[in-house]
Amino acid sequence: MSKLYISYNQIHESIRDAVERYNINSDFKADLMVTITGGGLVPSRILRTFLDKRENRNVPIQAIGLSLYEEIELAQANGESGENIQVVKTQWLNPDEISLLGRRILLVDEVDDTRQTLAFAVKELLKEIEAEEVRKGLQPGESNTQLGVFVLHNKLKPKKRDLPDEIMNNYFACVEMPDQWLVYPWDAVDIQEHTKKASI
Amino acid sequence: MSKLYISYNQIHESIRDAVERYNINSDFKADLMVTITGGGLVPSRILRTFLDKRENRNVPIQAIGLSLYEEIELAQANGESGENIQVVKTQWLNPDEISLLGRRILLVDEVDDTRQTLAFAVKELLKEIEAEEVRKGLQPGESNTQLGVFVLHNKLKPKKRDLPDEIMNNYFACVEMPDQWLVYPWDAVDIQEHTKKASI
Image 1 (cartoon, rainbow over the protein chains, first blue to last red):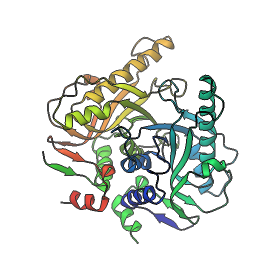
Image 2: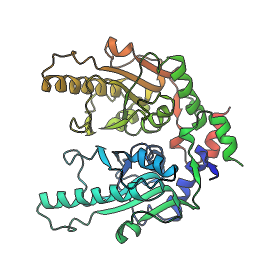
Image 3: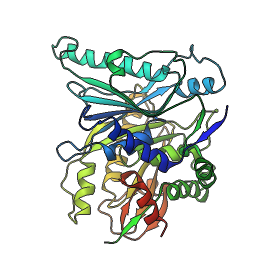
């Protein structure tokens, strides 16, 4: 599979373009980001720059960590399904620190490959929202919390998991692309060389 | 105050150089990063690329969030002390998810300005380590947990807070610099323009 090298500046610009193209600030109006540690860290920080502030404050970022996430990506890169790998939460949201209810939440990651990681994270976030609704005496869905997904790249390929329709209504991919091997700049050992390859 | 623009590639290279210069992989041997959300997100993800893997796995990253962190930085940018602003933890570590004991932890942030944020984070992390030691029936310090600090820039100016000596023994700044206004690439609206200014 051919490798596609992407530079930092290309990523930065594609995030800016996506926010504009999807009218995220006027339509989805995110007021909280949940970033998946590892892949989501750089994209979420750049995205923050382009999301409208709320009451003069940047949209906050909460991080979640999923172990075996890496192993899934690795297995897939090797042509294995990675389907039987169990995902474990290595960092999760603490309801005492952050309330999700009524928020407009963007889940951020770098790539939507087989959709397994995103599907797991979405399922767990929806459970978390419902649990908080129950704790606060609300019916499921009553808090009108919105959840969307923001990724740098969506690979156009058969997905191993689906996302619920209401999530796909707020699904934002900076770039849709064929199934290619992506090389992100943060993984580069020689960033000069990487940037040259990205400009071809 | 004059502005210093820094490009993504400059940051990427300065992290690689710092890991080598400080012999972090042979001396400190970090096996866990704790990144301060906002500033630390991009640096920690890049740093992961240059830290030796442990048992074939990347050094994990846990995120912590400090509210009013932004306000302190803003107040300082405006020449105010920001000293009376109270720091609140918006995301913290969960001992059920991650044990700190015996780890070699690098706390990661973008800039060490007045050292207030770092001092707060270090104090809270040391408390967390001691609390875990107590819970596990150990004496304070018995777990031999190591804590160090990694920042992109250390501004050479009077600091409002100090870090304990044992932390300063493992204090790694990619660049030490006079008190200038730093403009990081992730804050750029026009990244092409920003990169041009960074190359001057």
